[in-house]
Length: 342
Image (tube, rainbow, N blue to C red):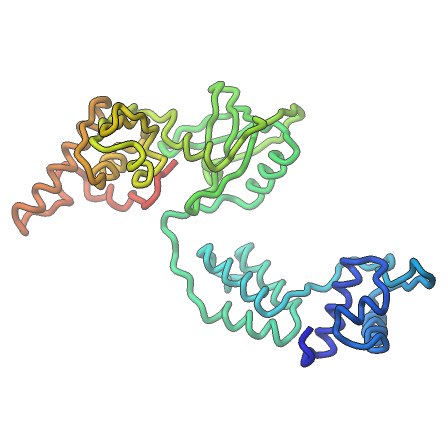
């Protein structure tokens, strides 16, 4: 440990060592702290004076351990750990300064519990940094999310009340396999008993959750992230099939999994099979493919692709022609996001 560490910092580290290694002896404690045994006993005394019950047992198997009555140990973070927590909150695009927000409130409690020098650095970053909002993010209700995470852990079936993107509402029973966070969106990966199939539901669209008594066993080889990626192009309203003049291995590195499944037709040609609830989004993703392709299945996507192509052609013909106004209502632009709206 740093020889310049304050007595308070050493006392907190002493508590951490006793908590983590019940029965730790005075000589081992001194070695970990980098001080003499006499000094180590002094730090134990400081903790006892602060009301923390630390018991000592004599003999070859004796040592220090926490006694009964310690309800809540102090939070022990280094400056780097504390700043890392603040940065993680900012990276999630929350407002860490809003005391009415659950994240801001929790972070405030952490900062207030830290030693003064560490808290001052964390508070400075917390107040001075303004996170840019992520318009693609959709944060679910914390209570709903917690209930679903616990149901996944306990392997308990749940009844969901759900509202789709189109506004339709339904209630059904599912076996919750895992909660997956993907690009700022929270999904429940599950087995739907109504659809008798795997499904991924946006947790921010879950209106209510009821934990049921039935239990289940998830697939033994379940890879939640890979399964979610595969599912994002399955079960949507509009089926699509596209033939692309490029090898499948090359396309796997270039195309998002949400577009569908890649099937090699030959060494230089690949079929893309999937479905979508947003043909505009899908057509614009296809437009970015650096190879020629043909939409051979999905009349909705074919129609939308023609409209997208007309927009691009109109934009190249004359500066006076707005690409926005061709084949698409202006107010639909605000509904687009960078990631698929699952």
